[in-house]
Amino acid sequence: MRKKRSCAGAWACDDKGPQQLPDTPPLTPQSLVPPAALPTAQGVPAPGRAVILMICATALLAATTLLAKALGTQALGASLHPLQVSFGRFLFAWIVITSTVAVLRPTLHRPDVKTHVIRTFCGWAGVSLMFAAAAAIPLSDATAISFLNPVLAMILAIPLLGERVGKWRWLAAAIALIGAMILIRPGSAAMQTGALLALAAACALGLELIFMKRLSGREPPAQILLMNNSIGLVIATCAVIWVWQPPTPLQWAGMMAIGTVMAAAQLFFITALARADASFITPFSYLTLVFAALYDGVIFGVVPSPVSLIGALTIIGGAALLAWREATHRRKA
View 1 (cartoon, rainbow, N blue to C red):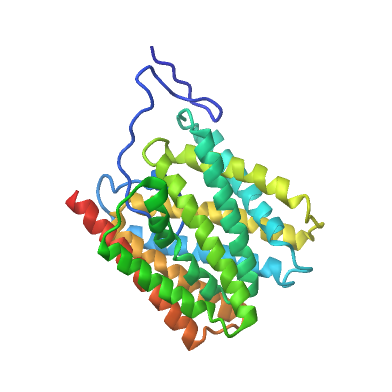
View 2 (cartoon, rainbow, N blue to C red):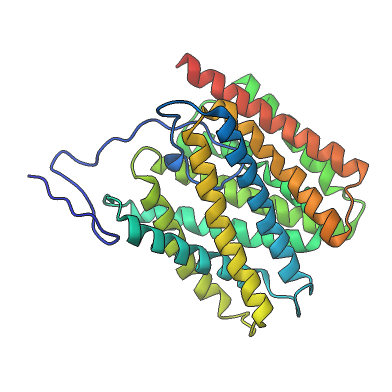
């Protein structure tokens, strides 16, 4: 017997268990959206439009770290704690996503609540640490270290998912980790602290990818985003109580912009992957680093050093090798 209702608070299920969704593309360099929310190209391919959409997504993603830096460095008033900036990100992203779900009324399935909670906690921790890093080091460095996400997820998948890793993947991991060590630069205490925050963020977000992979193929995109931002808002609210300070109207606007821009970036990212194969469009996500460096230079006058450029390019090389290997493996499967 089948029961189905379509609303934000109802689940669709039947006596045959949850519906099987299509396979999803490999993990991407950014943890923008869960693998289950990454659609494969359907209908008539539109690679040119997909590239434009992905460029928009990367520009918006870099803008969120720029706004976090502005809120955490007295650019918009007294600096806000990263936990408060993270609260603003989840609050306003939740408003955008729940409003969209309420209007579109997509069919939702019974969720794996435990996995959602663990995944969202890791994501909240990673976002908060990333915002702290963005306020302490150049945006290009923080963004480059964030590209370690898929590499760290690959390493964590060995004990947590029992996956086997071949020599090409280990080579990609080694290259990316060398790049991270270049960026951390132990000689500078301030840089080391900020880079370690970014590295911790990459570890948390890499762990998040493991739990997102467990959700892959089980739940539809709208439900993934709704659950993530709803649970994330609860966690962020509990954490911000201890560090809350009244934001100025300008700071409220900044936090609102972070949440809204992040939701828009997710929309552009998902739409881009719906119009071209993931193996073609994913490499354009590395433009996030270019936009981060551009914003940092124009707004804060920070120019990446040669060492930063070398480290960033090394990390991107390792992450790109891993993405290429994943795409090749998927085509052969």
